[in-house]
Length: 332
Ligand code: UT7
Image 1 (cartoon, rainbow, N blue to C red):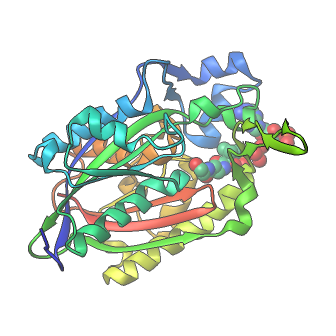
Image 2 (image 1 turned 180 degrees about the vertical axis):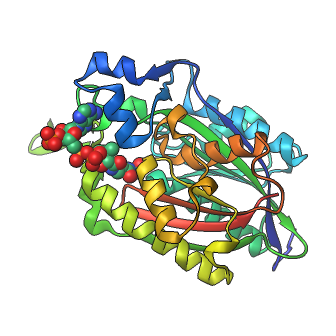
């Protein structure tokens, strides 16, 4: 089992999105907004919304099966499953359920929460297990069903989010390492900018002992603050990862950013002096799918033949926490 010092390769990807589509025109019937406002401010046109039979685990399982098949391995080859999500079907975690759904009987499975940075955090975490020789084959999933937690009366947030799942297979390779560099950051002092937080309510239990019976409250966001943070910090995080990888912007074939806002993606590309044509974007179709957005955009680009084996990809996730991160890797 021990393959210490092994490199990693990302050899398969997959994705899934719910069937139902919510357009900007639909949203204009729910809150005071317009296709023009949403399109020009965010680049979003549609988002996919899960119904009550399309669970996060089921969407993730489809994405995993595709990724495993592309990698040319079987579910029982998987040693490790990390599910990045903020919206598990079960607060105790959904990774084990996905393990069972896909029949990855040998794998250990756990959830990781880092909001929209979750996929890149999970990818980097999985690669550490492979680099140290503990595991050979890992599944990294980014999935979210944020529509469950949207306040449909709040036009500041309800127009932004959609649901989906994406997954990649990371494998040990004997020579070379196709993860070229990475960086990860958190700044909890800005935690109040973006929340889906539990609000407790005191409930008398016995005598003078009370317990709490609260619930999670819908998403709140200071959009402007998060926008400024993203445009400032994401180029820095990618710059750091490029430095570790001994690369410059000219070496990057594709910029694969969390799909939060087309204007953020354009601004980051501009700061890094990377042409807009190298941005992988599917935000118009899916909106912001949180932890799913990066593997969803990657999978689409791979299956369209845009991203080819050997291409160098600079990925970056950013969001609640606040958290942000970057991973630079060669595809395939
Ligand atoms: O995934 C986690 C990371 N998330 C992000 O990175 C999101 C970062 N933030 C953003 O992408 C942008 O800040 C938003 C898309 C959320 C908002 O765009 P903005 O250009 O920053 O707009 P704003 O919040 O400054 O609002 C401008 C105006 C306001 O009206 P007034 O005060 O100027 O009269 C808003 O009330 O637009 C209004 N507004 C809307 N109007 C129509 C806000 N939401 C809407 C809406 N439709 N949906």
